[in-house]
Length: 346
Image (cartoon, rainbow, N blue to C red):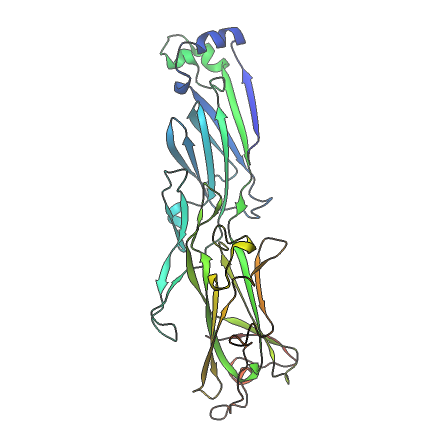
């Protein structure tokens, strides 16, 4: 969101208006100062930023800046869409930018990679997005917002007095927000003590963000789920929870409305290796309508009971530990002690 403050001073309104009739207003340059408040909603100061202006008649222009607090731009009088985002396009590793010269198609898209080993070999996954903040708004720059005077632009001589006196500065306040969300998945596991490792994936999450349109893409990808946190109350418990939190652009545009989703739009898959070193077991769940938004805008999915007869809550069979191991998570991941959290290997 932008707030505008204009400061006018100079040669007198009558002289100013008389001179402004001499040229096309779109040839007038305006000193546009954008002040960016990153801390209020984005919560951090990036090390750089990119600003794009999409002029109705003057086209697309952009600036890169290491000063993330304010930037002065010179733009012709026109109606603009102004887009600010953190860092520069080349500084991101998890995503790339497309169509930045188009105010309707500009997007940050997640990069992808192929899994080359394991149960999901050959599957193409999308990376989790790095933290990125952006703001978008529209503004009108009028012929009255002039720093370089008309007499200067017309190459009149001896116009230093007007050049110094006809100073207009338009000050806009930008308030970027974070484009990413956290997605927390919690699954109750019966027989968790018999698990040696777990890996998973979830489909149906947005594969990018439409920057100028301010919403997630309609297209989706699959996210791999490694390094789950396992939790039991005491070291004697056979049942417990596994939890995984990832960063995402959220659900695809339209599916953020619960009534628009199908269960099969998001599929969660889990693959367990048990402590005997040979038993594996997998589960698949259609969870599209189970994903909820928390009050802070993040996503959460909880499976704590059977979803259906064909989609039971994970129930790992009792197996004997391999070799001299005396237990599952206790032996392979770390000492449970009196319960608590441990990281389960993939």
